[in-house]
Image (tube, rainbow, N blue to C red):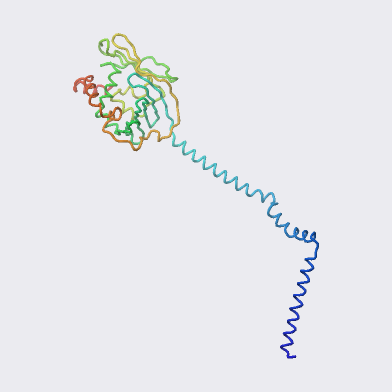
Length: 317
């Protein structure tokens, strides 16, 4: 036999022997009892099972620690959000008042903001730092009039002058009165005493009770000064009592309740999307009957010259 043929035959014999041995091993394993096979399988799979389902305490603690950290982070975010919301709020005096001229109203007064709301008319006035623009708006008609304090006081509306005139003697001097406790707040009293004889239906005396703790913001004092006088708008009036020339007395303003609240700053912002008007009277009553009302008020206020005298006198009190 040639050498090459002998070598090839020898290789084929070795391969056949190898296949035979493998077949014998598989046959031997397949002939094992099922209990032995089960034991072998459990021996192979048990470590994997333990690794997955039987973690050590340290390993089991890791997900819990992660969850705890995530919870702490969420709590910190929540507290930070609450802190920012608290910083955006201001301490506000909420005052519920009623009167036969001013009607029912709610006042909201802080160190740098002011708002008055008249629920029956759905009418409001608001102003706040830093610009201190005065906004008059009606939530029913969705109308708004905005102006500066200086512009408003230059023309001082007829309604504001008429309201102020009805609370004072024509000529008067201011003297200290007897203080009272009103709605739980201490007050000091300023009495406007007529400086001349009065007829029976004219105002002879008016007593203003002003809250000791509730000061108006300086810019709002400037707003009210031309119509109410400097002395009467430093602190918020809580009650106004009048005495007429014939001795009759009446209450023009009283306070039902006073509470201190935390309110968001945006509470004092003017509403958006309202129709702009040319005056606060138009916001309050609409433009249909303004001319008739102005005519009636003009008769009450008298001549232009006397009205100018009234304004000059009021600005210096």
